[in-house]
Image 1: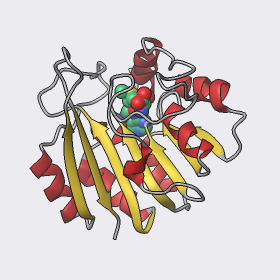
Image 2: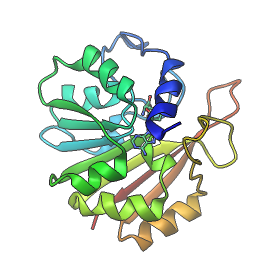
Image 3: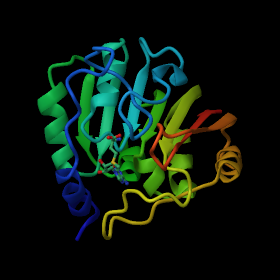
Length: 209
Ligand SMILES: C[S@@+](CC[C@H](N)C(=O)[O-])C[C@H]1O[C@@H](n2cnc3c(N)ncnc32)[C@H](O)[C@@H]1O
């Protein structure tokens, strides 16, 4: 089974996002796996007028929120089903595009540069950082912001058959790896889970050189 097929299979089990969150907002950004939990898009700094890339954009709802705030964005996901679902839900939003592509292939081929790159339980978790980080860096403007989230190391979570291993990193390993690849101002935070839930979320932010 190809990478695209295994992630397409995984996509079948994903629930569509609600049409409004607890505050009544119709778009929002969620870094964690829990509803109405964790920090919002301000982690990325101001996004209005910025060009944003999301790697492993899934159903597109997080990127759609940034575009609703005035960014323009490209969401890249290896699973074709994800592009279909994202377009159905968000296709009317101007300045928002979705592409079916593997993250490293997209970064190798594009000639665009981005002010912001994000990945929420997405490709940054599933591709070897020594392969992906130089590619991300090469497509970011100086001072651009890279932020991504995933489960803390050792947690149980998505690992579709044959889709490749997760690249779990401890906070120190991410700091070292990002710094080695030229990123600065690296911050890693561990977001506690809501009461009664076991797994927290690791949120990483860094600045491109
Ligand atoms: C756990 S899901 C998270 C989806 C979305 N970011 C969210 O928060 O709902 C992981 C997503 O990353 C995509 N993905 C995994 N590896 C990828 C890669 N190498 N290139 C592009 N997309 C990838 C999968 O198809 C899937 O949609």
